[in-house]
Length: 171
Image (cartoon, rainbow, N blue to C red; front, side, top):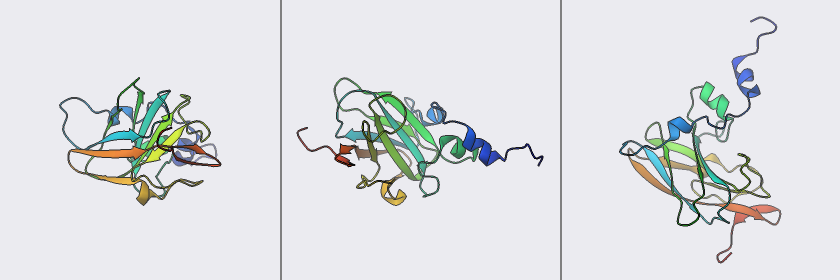
């Protein structure tokens, strides 16, 4: 390797996250069979912004890793973004590469900046783990998909004091 060459993994780390990466692969289409998660968000704070659903490999190293690094390494990464409907229960469908266990995150991106801001946005994971200051354990934030549609209910967590937690009922 020449002294000016950048190793592929380092080059991937230098590329900023690509907002549309994983969307084509994650898109559910009418009359399409195969594995997918159907996700119902629970405990929305309001109807502002978008919902961003992402699927990662179910291991600690790759969970919430940079999307460009995952895709360039040939690893699973899927994304679906939808605006919040004015009323009704939102439902998100995300296509999976096959049956298996995947880590799943759901962001209520209230300010539409495409990243989590704990002071503004809501966040939730498959398995609905209790959240602390760091990312949850991947085993607690994962779900297993079968060969067809697998339903998930993900509870969203918002700023509560110095941490994040689900909203209280009635708020």
